[in-house]
Structures are given as C-alpha cells and as structure tokens.
Length: 115
Image (cartoon, rainbow, N blue to C red):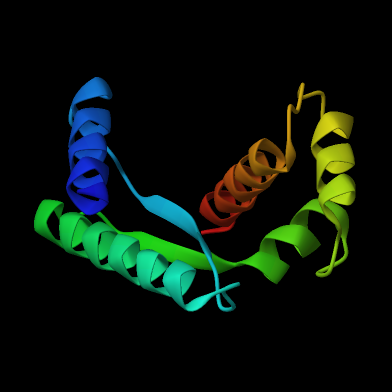
C-alpha cells in the first residue's frame, strides 16, 4: 500500500501545481541501515521512476555528499551543520529532514541556473 499511496501523492501534487512539474530531484541514498530499509527505498525508487517516465518528467537522484558539500562546503557535514547552514540562509528549520530538503532545493536551483 505504501507505494500506491506514494504514487497517489505524486499525482495529487501534480494536480496541485496545475499539472506542470518540470523536474524532480531526490536524495540518492547509497547505504541503508537495514535490508528492510533498502527494500522500501527500492520500491519507492521503482514507483517514482515509473511515474516520472509515464508523465515524461525528468528526474535525478543527487548523492547525499553532493547536497551536504553544496550546503556547507563539507561532503560529510553533520545534521547540525546542515541545520545551521539552512538557518544561516534565513530559514526556520525544524529538523534535519527540512534542512536536507532545503539544501537539495538550493542545489537543484543552482544546477538550473548553471544550465
């Protein structure tokens, strides 16, 4: 069910923005804490890539170290470093997940600007 809910969420998100999603960027995880988490990640990846291909939306995974280096200058930055970097940009960061998402957004925008 989690993959069906994820696919439905993507479809709802697409509808929320008027059907116009230009690209999707996501954190590319290369190491997982457990076999179960690796299986879940694989299922989410399969769902995301098939949905994007179906809707002809380009997608790209970005390695965690790349996101951290862009945000802090260090590819092995800690969660606290990431939070501080995004707070330093004026965001009210509630946790490391929000900091990571904002850092990924800034990385993606810099890539679009450099294209």
